Length: 310
Image (tube, rainbow, N blue to C red; front, side, top):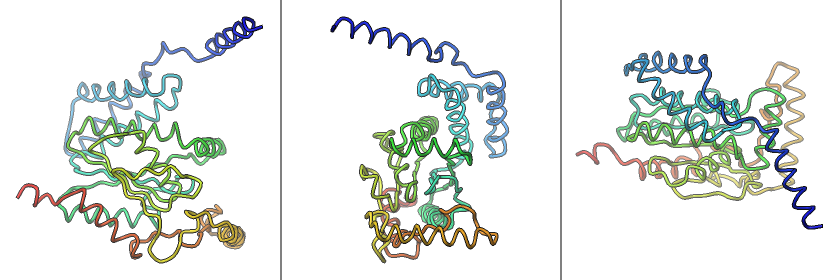
């Protein structure tokens, strides 16, 4: 009986291995390679740091080598990773600090359209500039606006973003290795805060990387505060989503559906999430639990360039 089970197990493993995509074709397509080289050459030229096509190809190959190692059986993720890694490389040309924006909810809102966390990041940018650093803000849209994108996000959420966090963490690792003097501040609000924490965990020890997360939901318990600041209150009222206050969350959800039904038909945003505001889950710069701790964190980890070199 035991031998039969072992034999069945071996047969099952062989079958699974036989249907997996082969690992022998990991080179980028000619079209992707040419697109990436052109993107680097044009992007860096616009930034005032021109490079040749040969130099650009070196960075492209390095990024794709990382992608092939991280996602050997997923071409879509390999392309997504290289796109993201090279995007960060171009955006950080001439910068001292990279601020990465991870929005809440489905993670679709760029910082320019995020009316709550976007202004906080712009304040962070201003503090860094006062400290003598040149900072840039980069948005990461982690969920496509499709039904399959939503399904994938739900799967990732249940498993704490094993693949999506890897895309960003490996991209950050790539850009910090390519730019050893660059510092990176990964930030996120609510669900974006949970995602931010997973990115930092996957990065591990990295002296160039810091994090700020706010309003991490109650169902995400594994929060790591090493080299990061986690805001659990805005300083004005208790965060119902962070504390898992079921009655308050249910009331907020009902109100969100009513507002969605009323304002959505009247030309307002169509997503229920646009109207979902649990008590205490607003983290505005004017709130005492936001500006003060963030300012202290930034000034403590990003000392004044004048003081350092003066």
